[in-house]
Image 1: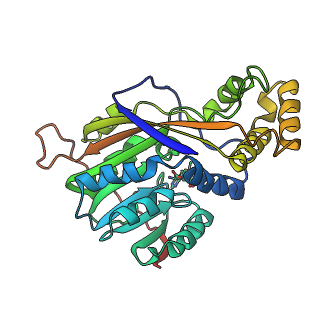
Image 2 (image 1 turned 135 degrees about the vertical axis):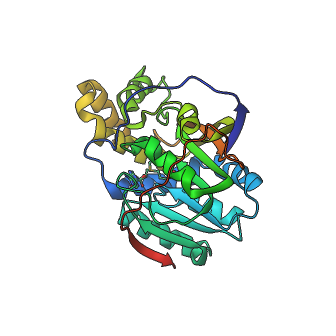
Image 3 (image 1 turned 45 degrees about the vertical axis):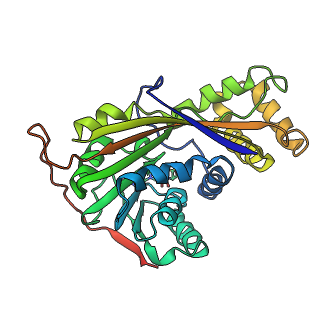
Length: 299
Ligand SMILES: C[S@@+](CC[C@H](N)C(=O)[O-])C[C@H]1O[C@@H](n2cnc3c(N)ncnc32)[C@H](O)[C@@H]1O
């Protein structure tokens, strides 16, 4: 059971310093969770790709920044059948998984993977029609520089879609463990700290066209187990011993306990455009490219 609904308008935002992965996190488990998230809570993906397609229907090159396992790359490749999607990530393991997924989805010929650290420099993408950055900007050391580079790489009139979770995915109902869902969300909140990207997009020269809020909900015991395992591993030092014991008990009792727990994700989508004609106030910016490792080519 999965559904999505969306409503326009800005919502409350968290403020703070970008933070990276949970401590002790396991890359294979993170990759599996990204795929599971798209499968279970990914009902927003086609609509988000529609937003890009509505503004770049004839796109020939689209870039997915921090592409991970390729959940956005695949949504874009499916929605834009004439486009090549350039998937950029610093993790070769993620990109390997992405190439396999693209091949399995029959879009491998139109997906190019680029192993590059966006903190070092913008990869050599050439001029692009659209940029997608889902749950990735908050990982970057200097996201404003990357947004300026994205603006410079986009053709005039090209579009950018930035997506972030509003808070960590929520899993537990309070009748199982009173208050635990809130304490877990609070303890995990630093994994996902990000600002309102609207002003950042504007400072980089973009015109923000729209802000969407999308909520997806589902019941899926695989998600419950994967997410609780990640929380148990990553948050053990930040949780009270009683909460760690509760997590251990919930995991041990899987699947009976976890089968029926709803999971919910709330996301904000910022849709922005590089103005077609430069305004007198538009910043002039040229990205500096560094040598990048192309670990794919069109495969
Ligand atoms: C939370 S995942 C999101 C993946 C995907 N966009 C999605 O929505 O499923 C963040 C991704 O950003 C990548 N990433 C983080 N910092 C990066 C950097 N400096 N340069 C390139 N990729 C980076 C990570 O390797 C990871 O795959």
